[in-house]
Every structure is written in structure tokens, then in C-alpha cells.
Image (cartoon, rainbow, N blue to C red; front, side, top):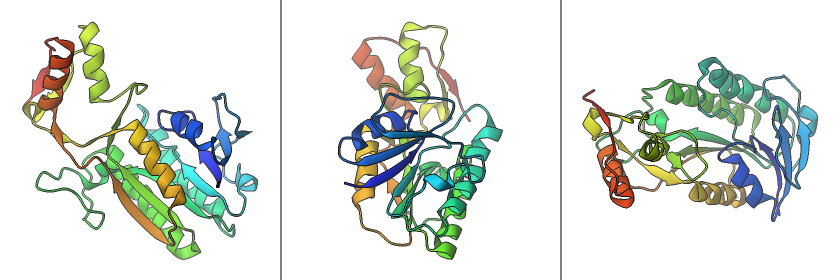
Length: 251
């Protein structure tokens, strides 16, 4: 059993993770502007408010930060990652926590068409999402090395699952019954992505909690397989026996 402080337990990753963790762990959940049905200990907090949850961090805890996923508001996305990360890490200084786990993305690598990305590769993010995650990773690395905070970065592949409301796979499925939704493919559908099922993400985070590690560490989390958008389209068309209306973009 581990003592866990979970930030972001009401989202796509957070809900199933919370459900799994509270079976065998002591979980404390920070909530803000939302709620969730759980047996975990809940408290109101805001990662954007300096020191708002400092007194909620206890020695021996593992802190999992799921906040800072992509939204339509880029300003909020930046703040929740970088400013939120700064507030969290400052709150950890002097505490004997087990480790901080930060959820990042393989988007920090940019487009790597030649071979699978390694944790030691140079980062060349091509999107706002990738840039912000890269900057936030650097913040965690600095605090880990300066203040001896055990920190683990998980760079996740493109996650999909039955409750996800965004993403290319979700858009394809929605377009089956809603003809007004027209998925758009870049590079004429030859763009490739590694897709990771939500259950595998939950298992990965659980394994990270139980993995004994010191200092600063980064792990790529992916299926190890890349699929083109055209392949995904063909698979979904075959399964549903439906011809999808796709907008192809050569760039």
C-alpha cells in the first residue's frame, strides 16, 4: 500500500486511475471546480494558487500530477503546466515525499519518421502542446536536481479509450453517425502515430508508483507500434461497414 496525493482525478486518465488506486492504496484527492464519487479523502485546492495545498502534502507520499492536459484555451494550458508545476514543486521543498510523477507526452520529440524516439533524444516539439510539456519537464528536472526531489516524467503516446471526448479516433467514430463531422487528415493520411489504450496507461502509472527510483527519471510509454491515419480509417470502416467522409490535406 502507498500513500498517494492525486491531482487531476476527475479527467479522462484521472477517473479510472483513481478507481484503481483506491482499491489498494491510501489516496488523497485534490478537487477544484468539480467533484467525483470516491472513498478517497478529498480536499479543495487550486494548483494555480501559490501554497494553496502546501499543508496537504505529507512525508512519504507519491504525488501524481495529471493536470495540464490540452484544452482550447492555450493560456490556461500553459498556466496549469508551468505555473501549476512551479507551485507544486515549491510546495514539495523540504518534504520527504517518495516521488512526484508528472504526465508528459511523446509530442516533445516532434515528428520522428525514421525510428522510435528514445528518452535521450534531442527534443524538437512542433506543436504548442509539445513545447509547453518540454518547458515543464525542464522545470521538474531543475527542481529535482536542486532540491533532491525524486521525480519521474512519463512521456505518453496518443491515448484512446471509450470515454475520451477528443482525438482523431474519437472523431472518426463520431463521424459514423454524424455526417456533419468530417475528420481531417494531414500528409494525405500517411501521418503516423503510436496509440496507447487507457487501461495500459493506468497499469503503467501503477507500476511507476511501485518502482523504486531515485533522482530524476524519464520513461517513454507507448505501444511500440505506429499506424498511419489511413490504416486507422480502413480498420474502422471495415469494423463498422461504413465508408467515412475524410478531408485530406497534403501538408
